[in-house]
Image 1: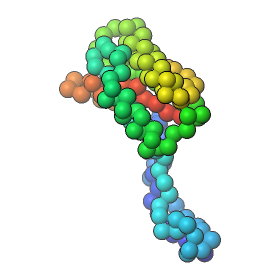
Image 2: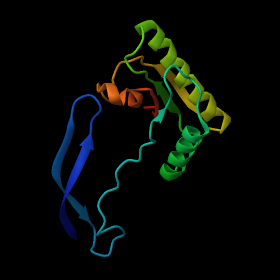
Image 3: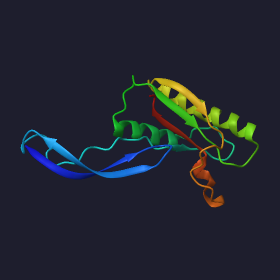
Image 4: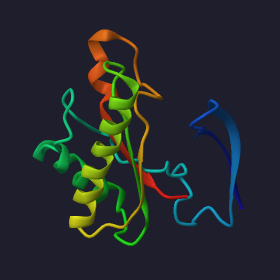
Length: 147
């Protein structure tokens, strides 16, 4: 029996990231993966949009497809597309814009044979940054598996 102590990080969206020590127990020293740490979940990178735009550029489309290939995302697993905006502009406009961005990405995903379970517009909620120089990071669509 192989007992090893390893560091493991668990990412929680709304609360905090937790890091702790855990023990990995396998049946024998020769078991597959006995010397490799547990794999971390793969995440698709967010795609970004220019100010006031809902157009998914070919560069951003390539980022989605490359992320799906890297993560070996199944075409049958339902996905959620969540759109966001920066804080510039009125709230109602940002809400509509974020939903339109998410719909643009969802349409792209469907055209490539993926299943989209839901499309959400979050407006300017949940910014990545508040820095005026980096507001472009908030103009995004995040794609994740439906729970």
